[in-house]
Amino acid sequence: MNRLFNTNYNHRSLDIFLLLLRISIAALMLTHGIPKLDTLLEGGLIKFADPIGIGAPASLALAVFAEVICSIFLILGLGTRLAVIPMIVTMLVAIFIVHGNDPLEVKEMAIHFLLVFIFILVAGAGSLSIDKLISRKSIRSRRGY
Image (cartoon, rainbow, N blue to C red; front, top):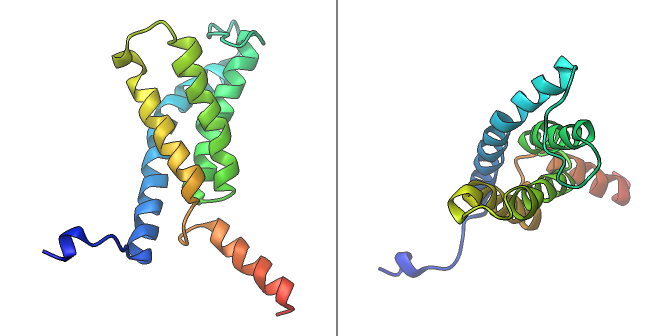
């Protein structure tokens, strides 16, 4: 019974969870981004929403950057906190501008993505990431190792 209410956590389990969370949420985001990348690469007339008034091609390119490039960085755990910022902005635009007048059930997926991205922003990539390897090298170089 004591274990049920224990508030301590196992760092290794948390690192594994962060790895699985990063990979799964980024893979799900890629399912939205890859079709947009295909549209961008096809060229021709781009029919895409322009929610912030910069033009459809630029809006599409920003969405592709956030949903494809940043997702790849997230999977690798490379620049994780920096990579989730464009993803957070993209979800905020989707929630409040693109689907601003839509009911909650239409915005729900973007809200879920947003919450996970905010969690990752706060928690970081965990020790099973390239960020951790870079961090170790940085600490060693400051110590003179």
